[in-house]
Length: 410
Image (cartoon, rainbow, N blue to C red; front, top):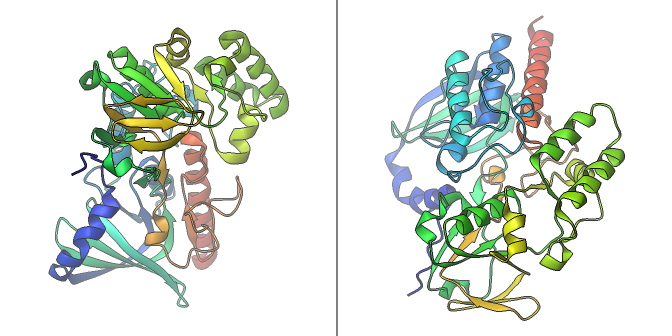
């Protein structure tokens, strides 16, 4: 029997048990609301706060038992926000003066707790949206399962805000032979620390910020660490990203990219001999066009140069503990950490939203017009522009809802 322990996503677990428990839920309530927000992560909380500035009533639903569950439950211990705090605050509330420039995870969670308290946000936890449809009566009908009270609630909402985020379900690639891997294989959302991997051969799949930082953490705790880097990536230091974001207020993107890439090359040298190449487009142009972020180095590159972290190309096959890579290299591994991102599951429950989201649950309209669909439908936090993008979405959505309400009842 395989010993591959891949964490099932919340939605998959839900699907497995839904048929057996759904009959135990009964419809006991129907509720009319002005605005329904789905998701109590940073995007949902920011939207709620902005609506409260206009005294617009709302209900906010969250399927987990806490706010910002991705931050609280599914991030590694050493995580800090990769951008300076100036670019990471939510609307209408700054950080305290003693908050460090680059905020640790626990400090950010405390900020969110203070945010909830200050704006008196009261998410309805353990409430899973089953479906949402728009009818010709110009109203959204949302069916939600209140798991705490074991009841089905039918909501009727004039405005619907999707704030469940892009990171809904773990994405683990299909690899030949993975099902027979005898070691431990987890998604990065389950990774906390490298302390339990000391002395083991561990492969990290994925070279974004999470993958590179997890590789550093593993190596720092004595694991024999390798990482798969399949595509060109921009490697920067946090100070260069902060410089570029500051210059963006005054200079064109192409010029900024030229400056930061030149300085990064001076810092790191030619990394191609270590298996790392740069994309042809600059880091800020790439971010604007694709939402793909540069990798902010935390010390990983130095360990790669020293040989403490080995770089491999894409995986071609898994044979027991032996993993084969493009180019013919192979190695024996005790564990695999998949830092391969997430999939959006919004389309599993959102109907009548085809003009806003595509088949993969991503926005059809380009930034900065991505946040609004038809029929009073909105999305917050889908622009791949971090917390600053979330803040902008929340303000735009609240402003637009206020305009619509004023025109209806003014």
